[in-house]
Each structure stands twice: as structure tokens, then as C-alpha cells.
Length: 402
Image 1 (tube, helix red, strand yellow):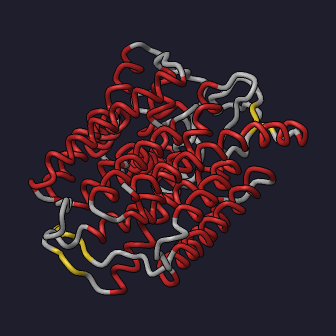
Image 2 (cartoon, rainbow, N blue to C red):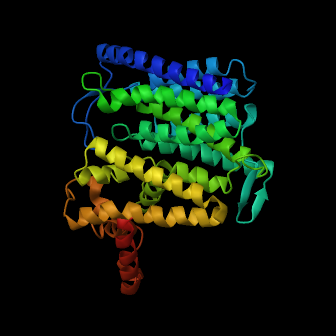
Image 3 (cartoon, one colour):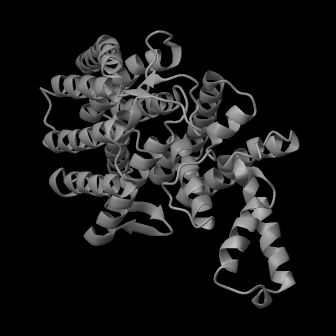
């Protein structure tokens, strides 16, 4: 009962601070004219205040610090240090704009703080490909990779109202529930503090009219950093399968909980690589952009994706005892099919704006044409056989649906 009181108090405190802070941030942002103006790839129609992440950051740090004041969590100071670093990086990017590579360097520094000072890193693959315990070097490299991927996944999915916040709340509920029932109250408090901080912002972001606001990189980078810590701890706490409520196939289950941000980010990065573009190049090839093209409103697209994510969470939890490889295979196959559906209906309904360069990947054969033009600059047409060209074109046309 005492733990439940701590959790409730942390959630209410974070929610209250967030609800109080967001209108103040909106007023300050308006006075400084720090608005997000619509552009060719923006989903907004009118200038909207950004920097909503300030309220998320303040409410989370305050509530989690107060909530954990009686708990022994020595790594908390380093977790908050990494969060503060990403907060100021996001703040500068929202106001002045940073290059993707500078943000990546900051992410690597934050990851180093988490790995070497907080001593949070992967030590076991839970039998994935027959691998159990792993050494320090491969564990460190894997941890760097996971942290960078999760931070960028949350950063890239902040494209429509409520999506990043809604999926973050869902993940906080999923991980926080397990931390609570398994006795890891310290990380349960971190999760509910995050939940309360985001919930206050979510209200204004989705349902706000005069007080509407975006989280910006200030919020998405902070969310990604916190979530990466929670994911690593979730996997590490589940190494010992003799513990009560231990989750089998923890890597696959955690991937299923974060299926949308992770799968969509990896998919878009692969497509950009095929186009010989930087993985950080902006486009409209995310699933939420495709749902908007189909006529979905922001709220409808957000709740559709959240519903899909909930189904994945239920599936991977029920399938956990089938093994990490089988559960991962299920996620990849079913997830890929679901990502194809919107593109199929876009093509079938002829809804593609052919003058929009951000939607060209949805035009059959466009990826092939991009590759052909690129390669023609370094190779002559005589060195490519017609058979090879047909095979490549067929493959890439099918890839467009993915």
C-alpha cells in the first residue's frame, strides 16, 4: 500500500506540474514568437508554439526526484544528468537549429554518461540466436546502438498531434506496470512520473485550441533518453527467470512495446539509404504521414497507431514463452504487412501528390528511377543488362509498399 501511495503521489505531482507549466510555456513562447511555422512537410496548418518539452522536463525531473527521495537509486543523478544534456540540446535545436551530426555527438555523450557513470548497459541477450551472457565490449556497443536508435525513434515520430506523447504514455504504462508488480518500485516511480509529465502535455497538444503546443526536440529527445534507460533496465531485470513475474523473451517484448517508433524509424532509414540520402533527411514516408494522406485526422491517425501498438503489446506478452526469435519474427512479418496497407490504398486511390518530392516513394517505380539516375552518373548504361534492370525494378516497386 505504501508503494502504491508513492506511485500515485509521483503521478499526481508530475501531472499537476505539467498542467500548470504548459500554459506558462505557451505564453512565454508566444511573447518571444518561437512558433513552429508550417512548411512543405509540416502537418500543421497554422503557426503553433513549440518547446512543450520544457514542461515535460521540469515535471518529470521534479516528480521523480521527490518520489525517489526515500529510495536507494544511486544512478538517478547520472540519469538526470544525461536528460539535462539532451534537454539543452533539444532546446537549442528548437530555437536555433542544430545539424543532425551535432545532435548525434550529444546523444553519444549522453549514452556514455548512462553506460559508464550510471552503469546501465546490456549484459545478456536472453538466448537470442543462442546467445546468453555477453562481454563488456559487445554489451557496451549494443547499449550505444539501442540508446541512439530509441532517442532518434522518438525524435522522428513527433510528426502529428499526440503521437509521440501518446506512445510514450503507453510505453510508460506497460513498463511501469511490470516494474510495480515485480517489485522494482524505483523504476516504477520513474515510469509513472514520466506518465504524469506527458499526460499534462498531451491534453494541450491534442485537445488544446487556444493553448495548443508542440513538444519539439526539447521534449522528444528527453523522452527518448528516459525510455532508453527504462528499456535497458527492463531487459536486465528479466535475466533471472526465477524471479516473480519474470518476462521471457524480454528483448522481443520490449521491441513489441515500442514497435511503432522503432519499426517505423528503421524502415524509413533503410528507404533513405536506398535513395542514397542521409538517414536524417526529412520526408513524408512515415506511417503517420501516409494515414494523413488517406484522409485521417491527426487524432484519428494517432489513436489508430496507438491501438495497433496496444495489440502488439498484448500479442508479444502472450507469445513470450515461444522464444525471442519466434516473437521477433512475428513482429517483423506482421509489422511489415501492416506498414504496407496504407501505401496500398494510397496507390489504389491515386492519392499521391506527384509534385510533392516527399511522397515520391509512393509512386510505383520511383525508387528504381532514383537509383537508375544516380548510378548513371558513375556507370554507363551498357554495363547493366536488361534482365538485371527488370529484377531490380520489380524488387524496388514492391519495396515501395513497405
